[in-house]
View 1: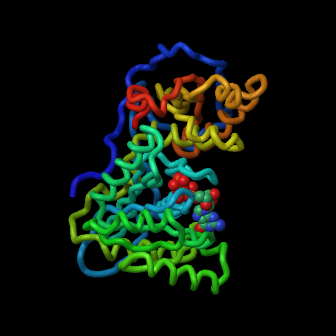
View 2 (view 1 turned 90 degrees about the horizontal axis):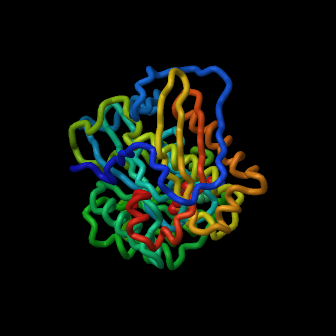
Length: 352
Ligand SMILES: Nc1nc2c(ncn2[C@@H]2O[C@H](COP(=O)(O)OP(=O)(O)OP(=O)(O)O)[C@@H](O)[C@H]2O)c(=O)[nH]1
């Protein structure tokens, strides 16, 4: 099976041609680092290692490897579940719907299996060009996966959105399982009713209730996903956790930080692009642009006297330092790209 998902994006030299450069904030870490990488002066990628991911687990005698993805209505808990399985923050989560835009893969390594997880945006009725592209992306991922886990949040009744997604699954060659998420939020009686309602939606190969927050049944879910993978040689080297370019992960962390506590219309209007990354000794310098659609949104992001942008920068910097294991200098610019969600050129530039 071929690789799933978007091709890694490469960024050229730092482009500062945009006309709408706003106030900037720079954040620099001070404490000493635990790990330093040899400075190369150019963009580079590292494989993220995670010892726990190499947990030894024998399910049967053959080696299985393949791709799985979680789909489901917005806010169903797909990203949180992916993170719980991979054990590292790789996809952003937020209590606002439809904040996952990038296809981000994580890889679970077992002694006799390799599970490659693909994270997709929620399928929804498209209202903009971006919406249409997102739906195309979801379908593309679906057609290339071996197992699809449809997520149904246990704390919300099965609704039209769930029926819409289930009806789209009929023609797929992938094994389709149901994942009932957030079971920590409901009592056993509600859960039982919910499981019944889910089982009536589609002929799922299995139905697995989980809680990504408490960890309940997360490993069972991995067992189930692995069980339905095809026999295949190993697809990735042993210690690769995700092959998503670091810059995309970093952009996601910045975007997540910028989304916190902002008004409802803003999440869809924010995009982040890492323009340049340099390693200098134990310090990684990151120059990133945060795009919004309107001047009014720019003021919201920046906040009074730049206070909010500074907070966004500090929070993102701390998380990026964790991800990279180096000190980080983060230079954030806010730019206005008018109506970028409706403009094909801008969408391409921002990676959609
Ligand atoms: N209590 C509880 N909350 C959860 C659980 N899983 C996810 N959540 C919360 O549900 C919200 C949505 O989770 P996400 O993982 O962002 O959902 P998603 O399906 O990826 O959402 P989109 O990106 O909108 O498609 C977040 O606030 C999570 O913290 C869970 O197992 N238990």
